[in-house]
Image 1: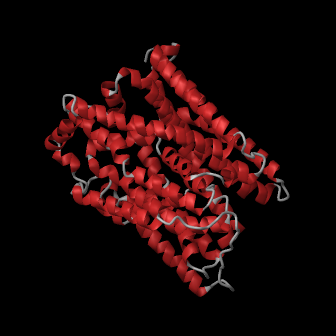
Image 2 (image 1 turned 180 degrees about the vertical axis):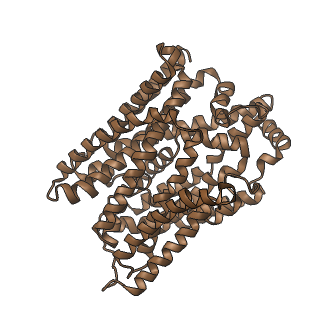
Image 3 (image 1 turned 45 degrees about the horizontal axis):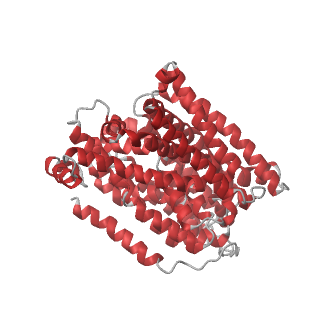
Length: 530
């Protein structure tokens, strides 16, 4: 990439580290709230930036661009519908979380149901992070950076050795942020990188359109529309990876789980200074998420036009486009913010794993009389072990069969929908007992595994319903099961949410108008591109 770009990469990465240290050195890292929730001091810009960068990873940027290259704008559903889920989280879920003063989502379930339910959900979260998220983020990020910097040629090693080196470099740096810096260091570094990622991410399609339009991006956009009308159909055909009907079934459930109940995401909002800042942060992120298709979908269509649909592998679209259209002096900066996105996804999941273990496992079962300092220390030790395990596992993903990433996204349904089910039932009912939550978790996990890894192969994948439809069906079934148990064996007394007085619960005055505007904009995009 040249000396200049190497200096830009190292300089921006070092700047993020220094600013993160300076802006977080006054935070109390010795106690639970300080380490796990940044002292409940996060403001709206930090929450919004950290939410977005935690979400954006190499796998998503490269993978969604590749899908857009193949299928067009219809894959924008993964981005735009996330904004609606953020609105629901800000207006409905977050007030209940902050009022109870919880540090983790399983902590809310303990209050609503019992300790066994909390433990089961904590273990489900941890298994998902350890088996799926952390190794995949490390592998995909290492693969992208190794290719971008041509690490094999640079160090004179094989591709496999370069992958191992890059995985461990990302893992070690990410672990320093997540384990030794706590949530606030993660969130602050995320915010700085989010600014760079949005700037760099918007430059890629801008220069791509200029390449199509002979220097004029507006001419390029007009040409792109005129020459590729089929790529701008938001509905798509029956064989699309995201059939339009799934928007009304499992898609919104997956989005609501991710943005409203996933510990790695919602932990930023749980650390808000007050309800007002938490709602503003989520809704600001929702506004920016509407721009997501410009960063991760439009480049795929541009690549389709520029390369005449001739790429052998769709996932080559984004790195090829960056190398073709981004001016040489900007490549080092863009590599740095991409590195920041990789780090964010890794250290956010790792920090959340440390939080879940320290609060929900260690204090509950290992040492019930542990002080805050001991809980934090135990969490850090667990994080180190988890990080090392992830760094060992990640390179072996290279030997996995084609299409593993999509397969693993489907696997996430094993725990996402069951957890979402018991949380929503817990929020909106008062007499459904702990037994119903346990049955809901067991049936949700068991029936999904039976469906996707049993019946699907008996019936045949081509004739089987889309996994998002299956998720919706099982969600409704499990809600009915929980309500039936609640009717047959209700709690002796109705559940009454407690007020922890942890933060000021005054809502943001503009939360509902801004939320309504976000929903209206998202819905209008489907009328525009239909």
